[in-house]
Image (cartoon, helix red, strand yellow):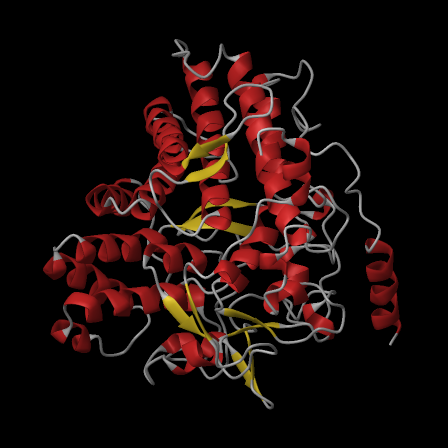
Amino acid sequence: MKKILFLSGIVLASLVTSCQEEFLDSAPTETIGDAPVQTKLNGLYVMMINTGTGGTTDHDDFGQKGFDIYSDMLSQDMVLEGVTYGWYTRLANMSAQTDFTRTENYKPWRYYYRIIAGANDVIDGLGGTDTVPTTDDNKFAMGQAKAIRAYAYFYLMQLYTKGYTAGEPAIPVYTKTQQPAAPKSTQEQVYGLIVDDLTKAIDYLADFDRANKGMIDQGVAKGLLAYTYAAMGQYSQAATLSKQIMSDYGYPVTTKVQAIRMVHPGSTTASGGGFNSLDTQSWMWGYNLDVVNGLDLISWWGQVDVFTYSYAGVGDRKGIDLGLYNSMRADDDRRNQFVVTTPARNYPGNKFFDPNRVSMGQRQITTDYIFMRVDEFHLLAAESLAKSGQEAEAKTILKTYLQNRIADVSYIDALSGVALQNEIYKNTRLEFWGEGKSYLALKRNKATVTRGSNHLFLAGQSFTYDDDRMYLKIPQEEILNNPNF
């Protein structure tokens, strides 16, 4: 009871937010001043995991992984299974998505534009966005800065638009610091900048040997570009990049033992799984968290893991949509990633967990954050190949990958056309549940999703990808402060 009371006090305090501060800073505090370029870049990477980077003290405001939860809920695949403390309620009942005054719309906008401002600060320091660096150090720095700017614009386009329509006005674009408020650029213009940034980043990062997986290297930049092309419907380019990532960087796929805590053959006790260590060889990009980072209950682990002292542990669990869970084949080992309870709850107790597995045990976060793993590009390659008419290769890649998850994959041989594409989409949702990837797949596939019976709100209702409730709205603060709106 003391734990619950302590949590409640913190939640009450968090209701007072800092929304009155200036909306779009010219640069985040982590990157301003005369700090060396790599120090500024490191500040941007730290911003991805810090609390409050969306401009509030809310307990869902903690960088990229916070907005991964947003996107997983927008996809309908992540279910809010408790509302004791209220976080994510307005996303789950779909009221925030249609009310531009809600902070759910403000926080991602503020976060990604702060990333963009910081990246522009680095780029300006290297001579500006059109500069071609001549030294290796400057190439590596420019490559990282352009890639992280592209990452931010890509996620803004996913979260704040219905889907790719070239001529449709979308969001403002800033490519340098101290730039006056800009009008909306078209989607074609924004995606054009993303492609240009990532193409140059891939070139600049060709020989970059990063110090750790928290930094963007060429493989990560290619991954971001593959996602970008897929979002634009340019599947041939997405397939080519995805296959390069599969073959050129030495990342093995995530094994069954690494992916799922279960009783594996040859043992009588459950082991494996966790998605909690950057040392996992399949992880391409992530963050090695330690006590020095100062994360506790305000964190992705706090919101998702029942073995971390925070919200999931006291009842506000995040589970898999029951319809999606029931769509798994009986011989699909991913069923074991979820703990099924009565009444119907399906939380990921065997996919994401603190290794000590003590209820409410992890107080200071030392389990790591994942941003990207190579497995994503096995399934993206299969998806892109299937959509570009290369079904035989798509099925080969899909079958080879799913042998790590499903006992008998021969059923895939009979699939073609829409049925094959739907099977790839379903397995993308299952494989990357809780990793912030399902919403990207929903948009790419122009899908319709139906909420399972374990949703607390709107259970059984169906939503198309372009429903007004399926994406965020440009926030009130931008509309009030940008004279071009």
